[in-house]
Length: 482
Image (cartoon, rainbow, N blue to C red):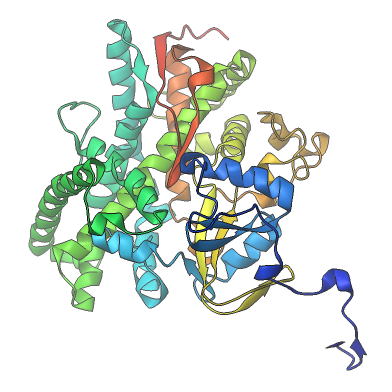
């Protein structure tokens, strides 16, 4: 029985009875291994989608000895994300794994520690700061153009994923530390290569049934430790330079010029001035700003490659909407509806972060399911975007659904959260969109391209984030005729 607002009592219908976690269905498990036998962890998100179709929007799995409750319903997921960080946190294993690697930062922080760092991060990525930084984004994109033009002249294929990651790490390093690392024009500088090693090992350790690396180091673990040491030396140099600059220009204490300078001010106030603490926060920012944007750009080029009519339509919009292709203004890029629709559609089908691992901090009821304190959750933030219940012909890449939603029902944009939701919504959204829009505008204006890698060979690979297989394209100049 439950009390109604008028004080009377009523019986809860059986269909609305609260379920416990133990009531939920799920695939059959094996002793000790759970569901790990035969499970490809690099395609976990795709397997969870199939199980969600079979067992419903709430089900249980076991990854080794640990049980996870998997959520696929977008409304329930939104409820959970809005209750962070008080009732739900990132999965409990994240913080110790990040700390062991020396990269504990705003991503792995919780509670008061997160709230303090969040303010600094948000300040470094606010609209005013990004508007001032926009010319630096254009500079990096023009370097990409120059790199591709040189390779085109030499008839060399373009390694799209690698070059996109070079560009995004250049932009993020400049924004974060005020340092122009310029990996696009310096192939001997391997900073970006070392950064690429972090996410796969994080994914492996977070999903390991036991912490093997504390007892035996595999070659991949030793490679990661070497990469972290190389990056540590670079970042410590940047920190030293920033400290010297702030000593010479004390006005920066009141008005920091970049994320690192803001961190130095904050850490001085908190009494924690160790380079190791700063290193963790810096690497977190670099990882968040590099892979996610680069991989989305790769998928956009992939989709434009297989739809020449869409590419021609986009080029027409760019030609009519941009006055200077050498340096398109941000105001112009924001007023390109087809470009925005292509980005939205790409993030619907190829979200970079399709899964969020969480821990329930206190018993909570969500969508008629009682979640106990300490329960581990996996929220499938990509599930609704790929299902016909929420999007018409959901398996098709069709940007027109965003331009004319009334003609493509059902159309449920509120279910898509490529940048997260709730208090821990990604503060780098605006930066990512700036990079993506300006990059695609440049590529479409200056280049024709053809896929070298067979389309069927380009797959999704989940390693903390989803990345496309490495692929190559062949370039030739775009004549300007649509």
